[in-house]
Length: 330
Length: 124
Image (spheres, rainbow over the protein chains, first blue to last red):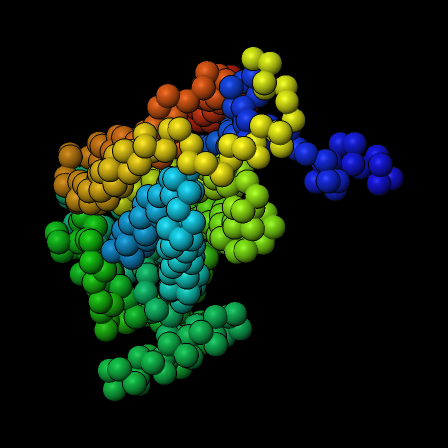
């Protein structure tokens, strides 16, 4: 068995792996570079499939069912900048190795790893949780007139814009038996603490009470027709919505809408790629036999490993360059 | 040509520790990497800024936004990923990848336009 393995998987033997440093004469490339580009080609198809799902769902969405302005643009912009900086530092790390400057390599690699960690931390500890505590209620079209003060459809129709069917904000009271009861209680407590008001919880057992976002508080305000860079504070206005009028209601999770389904799927898969990149960089940064330990015996081999890992990292950056505008801005 | 058939270790032990011959060239690229990084940061600002400009319709904003994103992606691929001056083998891979990716997006287009009538289950 061992022999069998070693024949095909040089990892398990002491045998020299060919073309880790010297280019193969037929391709002009060291083998790992050829390998990573084949892998990236498959990644293009993977993300391409998801992007085409995004396009299909967006084009097919009924007017008013593809939201905008629900994500935090300054935070997304900052995270974009963090990824760009990490792409610069990783080429610097590679160039430092090429010039046999180990200390510089370690420094640039450390900065790259930290950038990756910042990106993921912002995503997982701030951006996603904020969505999971944000609530959206889609109103049935036949009931929309009752909620005109939050939807502003007359203004939207008069100015030639698509209609609005959703009321968003923080859920303060949920209908009896809702799985969001606990979240609503928590938010209601917070609301009472902030405003001193205790009118958020209604005695009715089939109402949603939502502390509405600025846009639903003044839906006919022209200022709300276009998205804003800085997120505006939530209003203290409350919308009481009867379950009879609700088409669907959920937190901003994948089940909320095709928008959030694709948002979480694509940013989630992208986040996994960032995590994978961080782990590989960490391996190449630590004094392990395949990491900086390799520097003493074969620094050019280490430089090639860093170049290949860097190519993956730049690809992850490149995907984000498209993810950022299509979900945050456009 | 013959020396490429030597085992790596024989050739490598003498050479891998030395600063490669093209080190000076790599060092001279450092400035270019910084400039591209700065350009990408500026273009990120441009993307964000332009998304708040009214180009007449949301569709036009999408076109403008994606154009800037494509320029940024091209910079990353050409400079950071060294595609500028990369070997022909990799370019061949990428051309085929582009062909297949275009095919994938074309399938999406067919699904949406539904040229064979009666196969779409969509209600709108």
